Length: 232
Length: 61
Length: 145
Image 1: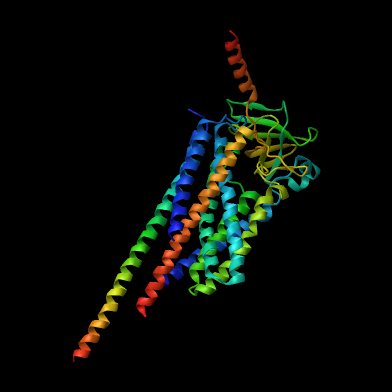
Image 2: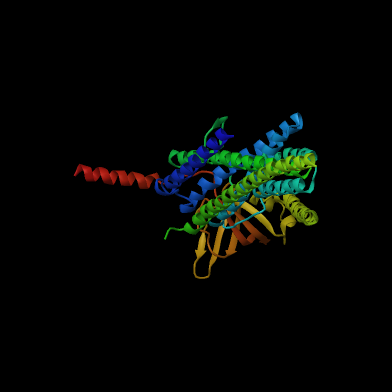
């Protein structure tokens, strides 16, 4: 338990320092992008946020399967806290996207495939937590939530491919652009490097949030167990 | 004045504020749960003492 | 426990409505916009219907009247099939010739009257290297002196 605390503390200061460093780099050390101008800086928060959202829900997916397989409530707990963190990232993804859309596209929101499927992901996981709240039996809750978590995560590849499958206002992927089988991000290195750094720091930050939330959850379990013991 | 500054400030500001609030709330929840656990443990050990005393009293009678 | 049940039921109902609305939009969104060629190929189908067209702004076709706040330009995909667009409104910051746009409005005879003009920017990001180069040359010229 003590080593867990140390890791969390390390991740906390590491990610805060990393985020601050990236902030300085983004605002003081970068040239202005030539077609969008200053609002292009929103990219450095929007893109890492979507990578973190993807990862958070991938963890939900993996640990939901692990729970259904092994029936260990620890896996369900990890899926639950990751879904909570992912939901916050997803909300911020929608918000930063809307703010970025206004000066570049000329609108906060359009019902195109990319935006609608992302909103759908957010709504599915709102439902996920309503489902968890409505079931009082712990094992039943874990079972149902795992199934919904797995189904909900299937939306992620749809979101990712939406800009290729359908006509959207949202532009295709810059970072994961593939040309003739090779990865070739369409962004010059001086704008790409800080983006990659921000993504790395954001993943560290996600890990920090996940462990912090997991620890809270364990503390709560301890409390519930004690309460049950004292009432008997 | 930089064109589009307000959008950038809003995007970064909302992001940072959201996580500050989230982290503080999580830590507070953890602290309260920890304090309750301590208090309960205290009470359990106290109540564990009581039956011994009553047992003694019964024996005396 | 009772308030929680109420909260869950209320939340579920709201969520169901939003999901239903999103799914309704989902059907429409598979065709978020038409291309100029598709619109011109079947004019009868699109007459008097609010539609979106996505295309590029034809170079040299932009006419911006700042006093009347009127913008007109031609949109095309290939430079051959053109639709003239009329838009009463402010020109967006990123509106440029050769830029991708999505216009929402109605066909009125051969012209498209737009009520909304959205800029569809590309996934390509660039830095003004010209500007940097001239700066470097400037420093070099100073050092040479």
